[in-house]
Length: 382
Image (tube, rainbow, N blue to C red):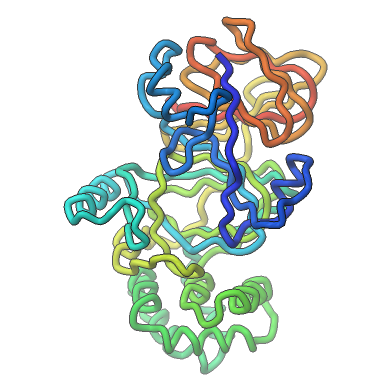
């Protein structure tokens, strides 16, 4: 079966008022439109044509179509006009322990100060749909960061002193900034805003932009410790557990393990649990992998990621239809043109406009895709 899926955009403040609307070819709503979720996660499940949510449809009819459990992934359209919160996600073991702890404490799952809303990890992949997609991801090489902070002058002295220690721990420094270092953070921000451009011109310009939106937020200093990355259209960024990141600007397709566990580290009015964030952070300075799609067949590329929760394919059909076997439940999302999707085992079919999606049930065994445009397919990684 092919089950059309629909959902309303989530109006987080960082969302763009135009990127998702432009993709879908409609007038902007006038509100920020940050994410559209395609999946059965209970936080915001998609709707099926008969009005049921996808989690309810799977519970009612999934077994007959080959789906015996919730989907292991969540697919999203994401349109950012300004910075998301700086954040990291827990490992599977950390999520299970944290969820059990908060359940035992009786913290409501929708409480503002709840950290673990489910027991799953949340590795994620973002693929740029816009010409560029900017992000912060991973902790920068320490020597580079020392040079950046030295260029800020006396106002950044407390941070420079901590970084000068040859055994400097970035997680300890981040914990200090988010808990006891607020005064020092404001001095560093003031120094960054006033600093002249040089080797780190882009990072300093970002600090000025962030300070305009989040005046004095210690997360701005955390951002100065991170890699500033620009993806080109079609490139992906994979973020594993424990890696600090924040998307800044652009339109993308995001695929992740089915979880809503977010530990925040600034640039947000939401709950920041500095101690818990530091506890899950990977302190190793590194650049998360930029994922270049690998061609697997004519018109089909795959974004290889080192997790089994999900896989992502991108299809660009042309004159001949693409015949694609699929193992497990899949969600097909159009991002350009008008690709037509046919079930392999039945006469089900759907023509998808950009921003529209269908669930492909396992009993189809796969799909044929014809027409023009671009189609992303999410499926279990295996």
